[in-house]
Length: 283
Ligand code: HPA
Image (cartoon, rainbow, N blue to C red; front, side, top):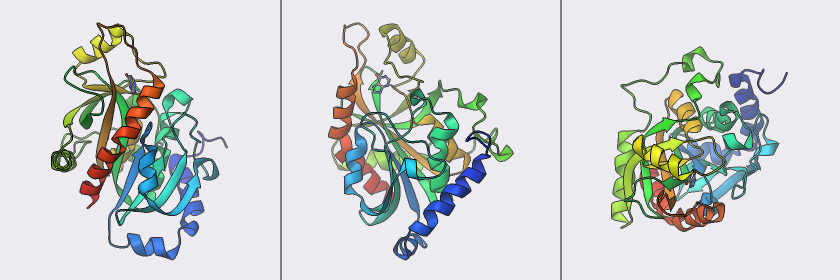
């Protein structure tokens, strides 16, 4: 049976059967009675992974059902460990639609994290600033998104429970986590704002006309990721926090175009900011 024919839940069970015996009793002890946080480290943000005290690090390609990360700036490893003493399951490097993976494949690791006990997801990415008030290095704490990956029409889950799960009474992005992230930024004296993320398929950056259009649609930042993982987490009723690091600011009236190196560098420079937010939220 091919990847897409095997039901999502059975593939999750296979991955869990493979991973669970590798997690030693120390990890089981660590997570008993405390909440586990899943963390996704996006473009250039992998340096935060160095701060994790690892118990088990494993390449995506070695885990049944995982697609392997190929985008530059992405390590492609799942790390079980502690960050400032709190248990985390971190994806050092994410999977993207523009690499050819489906929404199901991109969000599969979130289902596995959930099955292994994660009840909260912190997703990070590097994004282009559309709001003209933004500066490179600013953090946007997502409170909403525009989904141009058209997740809702994709058959990303075989479970009927997970169709039509968007509920007005349970917003995708948790208010308490947004407020905590903004407070962490204030306490640590760096700029962070609440905003709306627009997800494109990529892999190209936008034309000037596209940047103008996206701003008019009400988005503050644009990127090529995050929404599939966040929607999967929300469907599993995980508490979601998503953070964008502004790696470039669109200036549709100047002849400046975004470039991948610039995006990776901005991610690196902002790793400390993300670390303070993650520490505050999980603390
Ligand atoms: N557009 C889309 N994705 C991005 C950008 C951008 O300008 N910067 C970083 N990721």
